[in-house]
Image 1 (cartoon, one colour):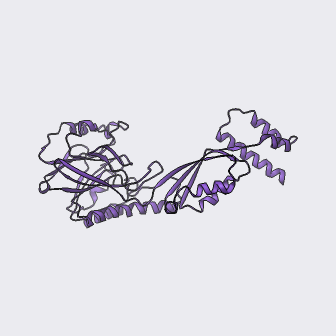
Image 2 (cartoon, rainbow, N blue to C red):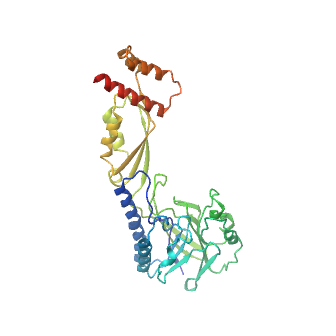
Length: 364
């Protein structure tokens, strides 16, 4: 008998965004986390999915409210034919401050919160056993080591639900020695890494269903799988409303205002620029005659959201400037700047601000 499931993680309900958004955009992204979560529940209902596995960080506990938790409970209840198994992560770890225990969860919801013991939940009608352990942020989690010595009934379909790091980059309480686990379980549903990532065919990070910042590139969604003993199939299902997109533009000194504006405008297709988040890295050399602040302001009108990372230098004709300003303070300022042979981008930005102020004063 095939078992159907959705695997998700790192939903981060309640999160406050810190990527430079204005307040209204921050609220919109928090609302969109809910809309994407609602879409996941709708997929479970419409497709009669047997199980929903949530591998930690369902909420961002620092900011999630009791209303958020109650709303989650109601949404899970709507998917009454889907059994929902949830473990905690580093952002919603089991603690005295957790709000999860204060809500009545419907009978189709199963929690794996405690970090002090490995929990096994069996579903005899599906010949399925789900194992998991919570996250303890304060002490090394010795129970994680016990995962490697479990006595597992190999006649069952065995799934591990875990929030943690299989690459050795995080503290002990989040580490998982995946090589010692991969032969024990038919599927390992992982959370914590925000990008979709297949460690191998049956140990997978689903990634965040909705990207949270510019480090989280590409498609975001959930894993939709079917599983029986000795056979596993899966497909990645995109569910995110938006993407975070980074583009690098190398500027040449002969680019005019309009050409550079057009290059920025066409950094993405029409649909993408109207809904996604863009970061444009500007490198190379810009003509001294181009007002970059004006250009960036005009470019922004074509995008839902755009920010710039200025890594360009101005192509400055110092000889011409010195000819025009040989006997004034502007000439002295330019000569002093030329003596600094190690001037980087930030140094040139400071120089340009000073030069602009002096030029305006001369005109006045």
